[in-house]
Image (cartoon, rainbow, N blue to C red; front, side, top):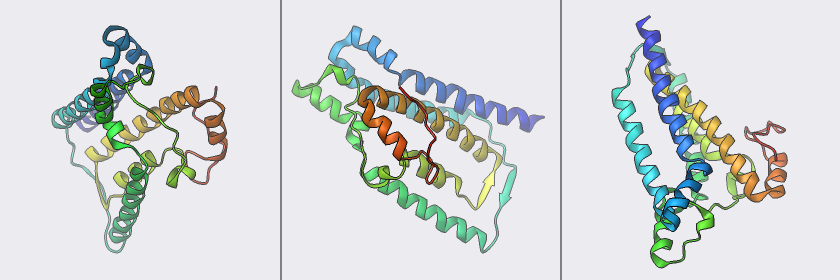
Length: 212
């Protein structure tokens, strides 16, 4: 019973507290309210949001229960196979990251534009662009996909890590839904066509998160 309670607390903290609050404060509705009050100072929101998210995640990690029950411990040669697979997933993650504007994602570019007096308030907190290069030609959310693979391919798995990992997968799924919703609203038919041709999961077409 103690183990079940620990798992439920982990899900509540990582998915409930972190995931839902993170999604809420990343919503356009909240950003529009900030714009009404702060105007172009919304340029600082992205960096502030990311810093707070990291602090909340670290805090949740530290205070959450950490059941150490071993789910599996792979032996040779399966541990080597999983480790090599993780390396390939890491390469895929780096490949995907190459096409992401990390200065924009973190929030630095927004502040630079604000200081230069060139910030466009219609961008809200991010100048989003439609990326259809590299892995984005084959998967709509390659950063999420390769992150899930990289984090999950472990030769040893305990109950705490598995609980946290499953919470993050749920968060990635919900996060990709809201991300697609924004992209459809912004890019319209272009993104709808992209949805038709590029799957969320490799080789599985026809699955859509959101339609106009």
